[in-house]
Amino acid sequence: MMEYDAPKPRRATNASVATAREAREAVREVREKVGNWQSTASRLRTEYAYFTALTDKQRTANKAAELLVEIKPSVAELEGLEGTLPNHVASSSHFQDVLRALHSIVGTLEIFAGTPHR
Image 1: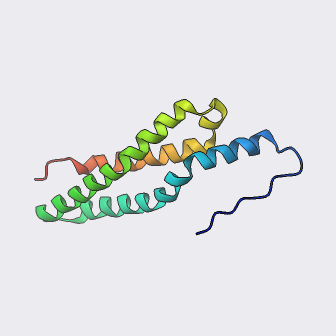
Image 2: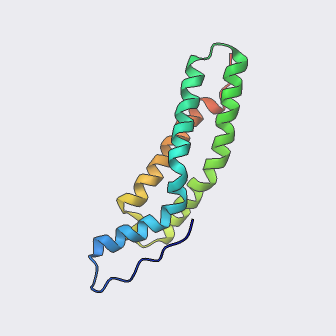
Image 3: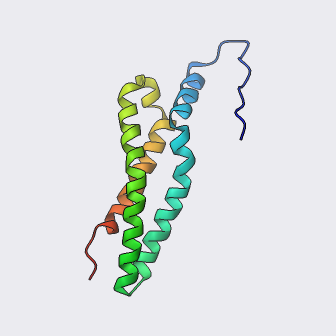
């Protein structure tokens, strides 16, 4: 996919528009993955709830643990980035929504990823 550089605006932009643009750019790479992670976590949670065989539950928990390993570096990266960004960008709803979504996914997966299966 080719990168497209938007032409520079001819007049000054609203401060809130500039803040939203900065926040979207800060979380762009992670935001592209969040939807896939959310659907996978939801599917795994559903599978875990409906499987009755211990081996199936264990396999699902292992998949959840693998997904957690993939997601946690992104959470740590965004949390670290939050401290380095200007306050108006870090507190932007665009940035905070992605961070909340990641925390929600991690919380969902941690419920059954590391639990003993009986």
